[in-house]
Length: 412
Image 1 (spheres, helix red, strand yellow):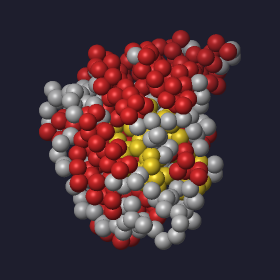
Image 2 (cartoon, one colour):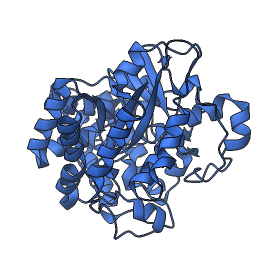
Image 3 (cartoon, helix red, strand yellow):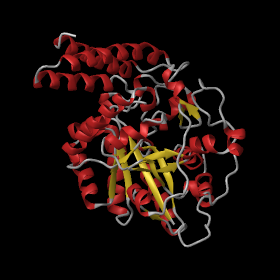
């Protein structure tokens, strides 16, 4: 059986302040790189990061960037990409998404020497144009959300799992439909999500128990059981693959903002987890020794396994955790910032019409850069009753101000 672990690294994280960047890079990302290289050299893995994350690693810890590049060049690590400043792609126009992905691809070329072909869709927010934005910027495959797919295409699942409250932030407390262990939509890729772009699905059924085990809420068997269940034998020779980790990399090594999210303790964010390496090694040894599992890349799953016969479909506005993009779009910060971004976009379009020189066009690119950074999701999250951290909020405001200044310089 083949398995895939995707470690999602996001240095734009809510409540993650610049003075903690090096701590997180070393306690989390470097720990993952070192542990896999030194103790599990035969196992492949996926590390995902935005353009901002890659730029910040290179600036803050160039030695860790060197390790990441070496892991990618060796073939042990597949790097996965996402929009530059971790914006919720479904809440902004396709044009914005394309620019944000372009800026990331440029960062990957700078630091990894290549453009990236596997894409991570932040929060799994969905509009029908989201996969097109990835395809238009050089990506060949993207992560998909099984739970949203099942809600959108299977009446029996929808009757039990559908969240009618489009303003709710999470649907993890809703009941679960009992899937069979050999569900092919969790084990095989979808071809041509849009022409030229394949995809493979992750599920909260497996990824959420992973987080809870890492944070000490669950015994390991609560994480192992859904992996065992969904590794059930399928009739025929081809058994497919399974994504068994697709969560924040920061939870390997730190507490992320777990204590804020679940216990409303904002002072307990990104604490060191002293048993992180021990748990990671325990998990990987269990996977190899008890499950006879082989870790593979996302690219391999999407392109080398036989695809499903049906097409991937997801209802517009769905997001992961059986919630809706609306929950992100209606936070106080979104309602404050997004109208400003809409006005800036109108001015950018005016500047594009009026551009007369290469210098004008370079300034317009800078305006797009700041506009798409201002769309960052972590400057709009968490929703009430929690509060967005002043740093994250100011980060967004600074990019709005910089975009405004560039456009002013262009005379629009």
